[in-house]
Structure formats: C-alpha cells, structure tokens
Image (cartoon, rainbow, N blue to C red; front, side):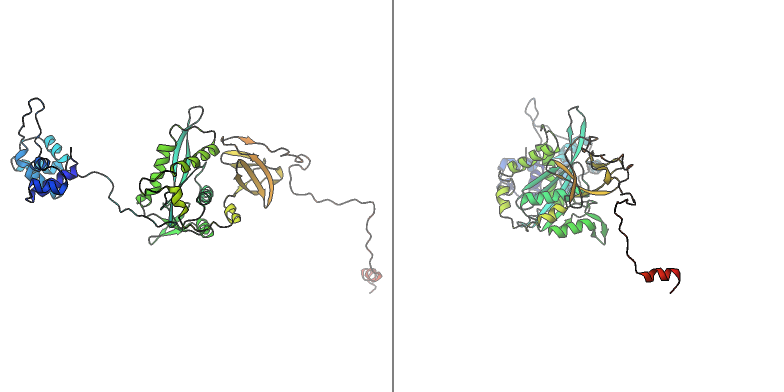
Amino acid sequence: MLRSGLILMIRQKALAGQSPYTIGKELGISKNTAKKYAAGDTGQHRLKGRTRPSKLDPFKSIIDEMVQNGIFNCVVIYEHLQNLGYTGGITILKDYVKDMRPARNSPAVRRYETPPGKQAQMDWGITHYLDEHGIVHKTPVFVMIMGSSRSKYVEFTKRCDFYSLLRCMVNAFEYFGGVPQVVLTDRMKTVIDGSEAGKPLWNKRFEDFAADMGFLPKVCRPRRPQTKGKVERLVDYVKNNFLPGRQFLDVDDLNLQALEWCRKVDSKPHGTTGEIPLHALQKEPLLPLPDKAVRDNYRWELRKVTRDGFVSFDGAKYGVPWQYSGREVRVRISGDKFEAYDGEVRIAHHKVVYTSGRIVWLKGQYEGLAERNGMAAPFSYAKQTDNPTVEIRPLSLYDRVAGVI
C-alpha cells in the first residue's frame, strides 16, 4: 500500500497528462502501479476476484480536482457531488478521500543545528514513581542537553523552584566540563518575570547567575516549544526509557543511576548526528567554569530556623542549636550530608533523609535552654569582685562638684 502523499502525486501527474511509464520512472515505482493509482483503485471482490463498479467512479475526477484545491472536508465534497447527481453514500467518499488527506500534525519546522559549544537546552519534566506501599508520587526531573554533541545531563529533585534550578544548572555545567555560550529554556517563572514589547524581562537573580556563570540566557517564542525540540525529546526519553521498571533507594541513588545511564547512552552513536556524544563533547569549545567559590555560592539556600530549633528542607526537618531559633541560616546538601552554616561557621550537619515529614535531631540541640529560659541573647549583669578597681581622680574635680571653683 502506497502512502497517501505518493498516491496524490501520482494522480496529480496523471491529470497533468503524464503517462504511467513517465510517472513510474519519476517516482521510482512500476508502470502498472502508477497506472493503477492514476485511474483510481477500484479494488478486487474478495470472493470472486472481479472488479466492482462504484457509484463514486464517475465523480472521482471531480473529487481529485477538489482535493488538489485543498478541499478535504467530505461533507462539502458530498454536497457538491449531490448537486451533480451523485446518489451514493458519504462513507465510500470518506474512504476514497482518506488516502489523499494530509496528516494531522503540528506545522513543519526547519531543523536548526547549532555550532559546537554554542548552545545548551534545558527543561523540567514531572515523573512518577511508586513507593514501597504502592503509593504514586511525583518528582521533578531537570534535563539539559548540548545542542551540538547531544550530551545529556539528568537530575531528579524534590522541588523545581529557583534554588533547585540554579543548583542543577551548576551541576550540569560541571558534568559537561564547561559552560555553553547560550542556554535556551522555555518561559518559566524562575527565569523571566514577563515580557515587554516582545522582549523578556529577566528575573534579576537569574540574570545575575547567568552573568556569574558567563552564559547568555535565551527563551523560546511563546507557544512554540518545538524551538527546543532536543530537550523536549529528552524529557520523553527519560520518562519512557530510563524510568520504566527501575528500582532505587532514594533520590541520591536515583541520580547516580541517571548519570550512569547518561554516560551509557552517550557512549553510542547518536541517531541524528552519527557521532558518539561523549566524544563529540570533548570537541565542543565550552567557556571555562567560574571559580569553585562562585559555583558553590549557588548551592546554598537561606532558611529561617523555627522556634523549636529546626530547619525545614525538602520535606524533612533538621535540628540546629536552639540559640539560632528565629534567625536565618545558610543550608545546603553536600554529598549525602545536610549542612547548616552561620556565616562561615558550620553549626550543624546531618545525614540526608529523603522521607517527607522526618525529624532529625541534633545531639545537644537544647543544651542550656532551661538555664537561659529559652533566651539566646546574653543577659546584662553587674559583676562582683574581690579586688575592685578604684578610679583616681584629681582634687580639682571635687572642688568643681562642691562649687568652690
């Protein structure tokens, strides 16, 4: 069975007066096949092998002409044929037009290939998994792909907020070994605050981050997600190829498996480029990574300590010394450890837990709380001493006080 587009081309050429031999030579098919579809396939009787005439036969040339003029609505064609004397039904008409109808899909777009090192595309996806009790949970997944080499980075998170976005981007740049010139994303609220005169109004903090990392941010046109088709396909690839049937202990274990999977699939020739993505990545002239201190700065988050001395992070509560109650501290995940800092001083660290609602206590968390009645600020006291210091004053001071001078 030929494709509908090829059948339409055969009929168009036949109406233009070309012979079946010429049509077959141009389209790479046999002369008999061209002759068959040029005249319209009448079909064989399944029982006796005889051709059956159709009420539609006298009107097929008219239908072909209407289709060539872009009329595919069978109701419109049916009404027109009835005015010309057609007495058949609409079903047979629909069957005839079906093979000539263009596919219903999104508009065609031009393939856009970027030079090496020029662009990376990033996006979020929402995935699902079952816990040990059979309950379905959602978890965001961050994906980034290099436009030229097609090298991939995948990271699952608890949240897809601003802090998580920057942390994942830093991790991706480190995984690739450099920073692309341009990072393309959709119009997410963590990236832009809106638009004015068709131009994006960048989120100030994201703009600062882009300047520190050295890349130029770029967003897709409104309602045109195919602009970043490479990363859109990667999100589906993760959902359909990486996750099904996979088992993991926690998010950290899942991310280790995701990176191993990225390296595995990127070690095979890519279907479009024909190159091995990991090898092609080595040829991409990426911008150098900023200093580690700059990168680490975007791995921190600010959290306010509760009155009972806990910091909430990714659904769990971690204890810190009670003296920090009500204050803001800097927190981060470093490996499998949760760390809380006051400036440059680490005040608490715990093993990360991935179960929401868990409370992790700090040893000695409330030490001294009862004695100080829960007040962290130092009390103001007078001080008793065995050897008081006597201030020596000049005699003229006493004369002034007495009013002699």
